[in-house]
Length: 389
Image (cartoon, one colour):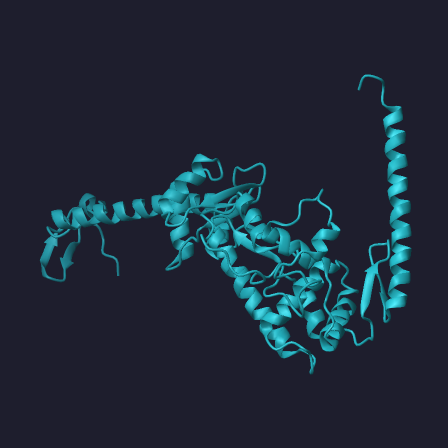
């Protein structure tokens, strides 16, 4: 029960102490908060709190920098049009990055270098000439150079060119570097084709590619040759193929032209091929375009003149293409022994000399008419020229 005013108050731990009514109505004083411990005030704790705060601050800054660098590395680049860039052999990452920034291909070489290290891992950027698309990001540039898919240039050798003529073409190919070999390969040792290469490839490397390609092609064709051919070696196949190559540029005629020469070889008849006359007179340099074949040339003895020698010349007279070699390995089976130009870019074939003479007479008539027409055109053109010119 509640006591009345003036009653004595008692406490659990002590004697009853008398209190006045005013004292009884006063609120009790709140307890004081606990004093901070000496450990909390320790300087080590303060320092650790500072370090933790600093780490969090640096982490936030680092995340921001990483996010910015990553965004720049992935963003479209400043190029407004496609351009080429050459990575030199032995160039380091920082050197490549500096060159890219200098040419305005990237915006920041440091971001490029750091990003490239993350993409490449243990891989490297490959030397070569690269086509960089407009707006390419740094990542795209790194991945392109990592792949090694550089720009490929082409070097084409037409069928029927001599080794000397191939060397002349190589000498004029400015994309290639280095000197030509001092010693030319043997005639017929190079395969005429289109060869792809990267900028910086040497001329000697192209020669090596052509020689290896010829060896592979000839091996395959020789193994698939028809049985019973009057050809004892691979070189003889190349010799005859070079003659076929120079006689006709039409793919559909090559097997038949080859068949004519095979029939002649089997019967012991001289090949009588005009291109062998030319090679015997002018060698690998070729006949000047304005120089006709004279009757005296046909009768002039050279090791290559098949109007004079029996069987095949001692070496090829050019570098035959794959189709010409395949035509010789698998010629048309006919009884033809002769052929002559038909005036349309092809040839007329014959089994007998009488048929051949008829074809020759027709060709001479067509040739005479062509020359007459050319003379008339020239005369008309001269007549239209103003006086004094």
